[in-house]
Image 1 (cartoon, rainbow, N blue to C red):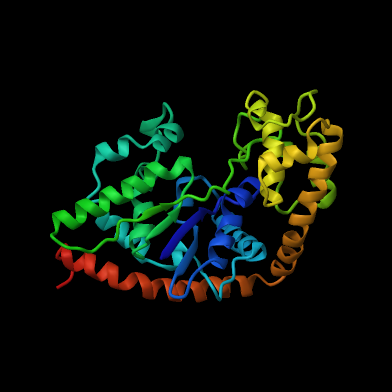
Image 2: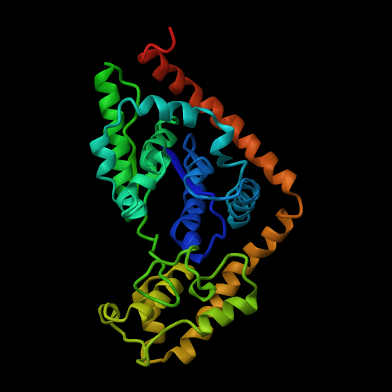
Amino acid sequence: MRIVSGIQTTGNLHLGNYLGAIKNWVAMQDGLADGDEALFFLADLHSLTVAIPAAERAATTIEMAAVLIASGIDPDRSILFNQARVPAHAELSWILQGTARMGWLNRMTQWKDKAGKNREGASVGLFTYPVLQAADILAYQGTHVPVGDDQKQHLELARDIATKFNLDFDVDLFTLPEPYISPAAPRIMSLRDGTAKMSKSDPSEMSRINLADSDETIAQKFRKAKTDPEPLPDDPALLDARPEAKNLVTIFAALDDTSVPQVLAQFAGQGFGAFKPALADLAIAKLSPIRERLTVLMEDRDAVSGALEKGADKARALAAPTLLAAQRATGLQV
């Protein structure tokens, strides 16, 4: 098994990122069998599709790497790096753009959502973003990719590109990656709107728990989180019509490594006056050690950059044979 996954370097990681991806990355790392590998990367090349000042992009890459390390990603056990240090991502992406088809990319839901009505004004990079994602995986012969519901279509595209390339050039080069879907990867919603995903782009700071938030801020945000006046039920199905209540129970279960039914068994019949403080205490207990480790790491940014370079050395070595084989298959190398 070779797991490959990345996170875009747009900064300000929050509880949704942690519970939806990072926590599971750590679990995958800790569950690796002998001979298995995990590659986790900062997708700074992907961030070029977003208007971010250069200095901010550079700083954010280091800060997000520090968050991953503080959360439990061990650079000695996993391969941790940022894309820009491994040119094979961009080189293979360009080769694969000769294989990908306009019709495939036009059908990408995220392209439609992000470009909106201004498709003529959107960057080419936003349109071809999924091809770079395919290269991110295929360069390492990734066997498994952790994906949420919003990324399944992109993984299917990576498989389509790999299959077409192998057929077009009569080679057995690219491994077809499989989705790695963890049942413990919940979809965390906004604290102000239980129907909207928790997001760093939400203008309201009260909508999310940032991983760098102080204990006091975490407690305040949960205290002011939107809820309803009803007590918690004993049946999870009764939460379906109560999105804010369901979100807070989901967060509790994910932080506590338990299930929604188990949380309800503990708190059924109680109101949010009792539940919110318990949730805040749990979140503080789980997140404050990460924040403390992050503070120490950020005092030595050069060391974090060094860890990324160490990972990039390993990544470059792993990607080189695949890139060379793709170049030979297409006649770019003899």
